[in-house]
Length: 123
Image (cartoon, rainbow, N blue to C red):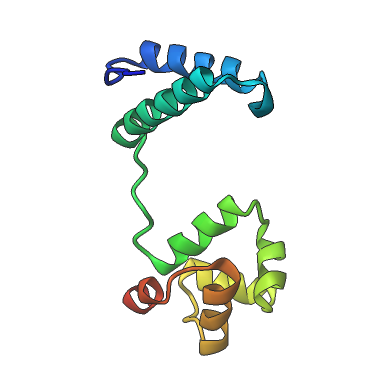
């Protein structure tokens, strides 16, 4: 199946509805034609999303931590526990009032899976 590039939000919405309809059948119930159609529509939709819904990555260490907190659906107190720090310390670091120490940086790298090179360039 060959689909052209999506040119409007209305067209994108129509494609997404069609994708949902196919997915609601269940993977085991799809014919090979439906599976191929689904794959093609998903790739076309993904291309449209990259052009129109691009979110710039965080430019700060604190911004990256907040993004990961959002992605992991963590409240600040839960993140503090995960990182092994007090909520007050985490709050100070996120607000820029305290510099992160090495144990905190290690915890951010391992627990939040933030790349070490990003950390090194942004602290």
